[in-house]
Image (cartoon, rainbow, N blue to C red; front, side, top):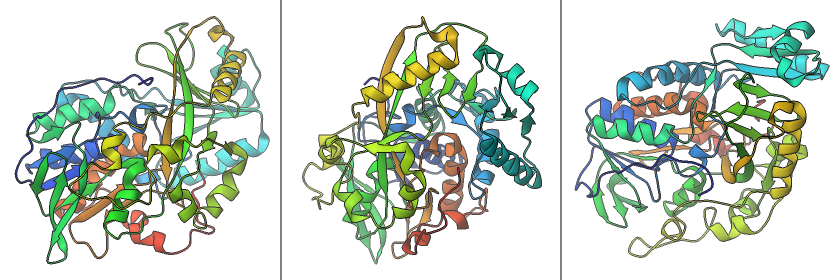
Length: 441
């Protein structure tokens, strides 16, 4: 793998039974299993590869309220508090810091949009500071440029994608749950039209509650159960620099490039929204649902390659429970990055922050960001299959809101009052059109 990741040892033997089985060891699945285990439930977390090895370790690491869609803002706010508490609960550091996020722009329309969001945020108790030209230029002095304006969100921050999901998995073990790597879930068994067991490559676990947090694999898994879940992925390309200069903003976004300080003192570089579309059978199947999303964001998307088709995560194939599945043939989605985009990203970052010009590139990688047609995740029990909770389609926002999503999933699974209103996330909303409802940010 090109993206750095903390490797951990986990539970070797499957339990015969569990109160809840969580499928998928990314940031959302690990947090869901963590909060369930802390409530005293017998929880088994299944991961076909390594904990956090796909998109959960391949993102920027931003944990933000700033510019969130109104439907996601409550869960983003709750997540920041949960991130803050995590190290003390587990005794391990996930790399979370409330360093603040800095946005700079010379585009007056963009600045006006941030001001409108600031006015909305005030109405729900979220603090964000609009920056005048002088303030923006002072905050961004490392760029050596004058800026027309900007935003600083002081209570937002970053966590370390290379550590976060594995550290949460250690918390699951500490709370009495089990975590199983290199163990793919092949499917679900039912009795009396509700969940009764999970079939894995290593055996069967009897359970009455399953959480599917399988990231880019979720829709193809749902298809095996006769559940139609519209989902499509794009391939994002990112690079990291070796540790270098100090005095740069911890997390800086501009229209050209975004730069984030990593836990090792290096920096992650990316261009916001820029991605490649790798055609897959599933993309063709759900093309109509995604017309509004692509119509809004087509300027940031470029044609991709056939590696998405070959990887198998968006297959329409039906598989058997007694034979290897596509998840076992491709344990970790590790697509090749777009090297032209990597070079352009590096060029832009060095132009924005001259101090980076002589710093070596440490690594580059790509990941598949799975999305719903409206850009808001699907979280909730699926109608028609009691005991089956879907948590997928996080649309590039899953890392930051992972704690809140995991907590809400635990609430839904146990019947506790939900952390936030779950209605905006109901999977059944996707049965109707997303036209006009695509997330703004």
